Length: 188
Image (cartoon, rainbow, N blue to C red; front, side):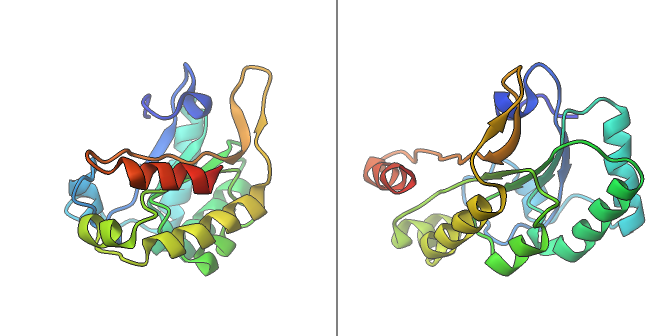
């Protein structure tokens, strides 16, 4: 249970965060580097992952927050299907770096309610230097288009909690205001 997500997806409640090891980017400023680099975590069966989703629901999580799940897409999709078949009713949040293949995102269509991507760079040189992915801007643009296509305009409940939509995060890198302005201009 995690209390530190964006307020409109966790509010005064908690998010049911499930972290997946082995992020494909390896950003030099990663706040979850020990998890992202694959040094933490354990291998579990798809059925156990479905049970974890249901346990988080029983613990009163506001949602299931899949953190960097793309490289385990087939297994996560199957676990979501199993859990939903067993009574999982929480919104599903797909929390990502934004560096996602459209084909991967399409596997989650109809299962994810809220996409929570970063949009880190418009500058390929910065993307190469800090995330080892010069193609980040073009990959993230296509991924974001797919996310919006799937879930559409944001929807909120009467308490201001997001039920459906896309929230884009951006981290301003020191000394790189121009990149941030270009990201914001693109998003706008």
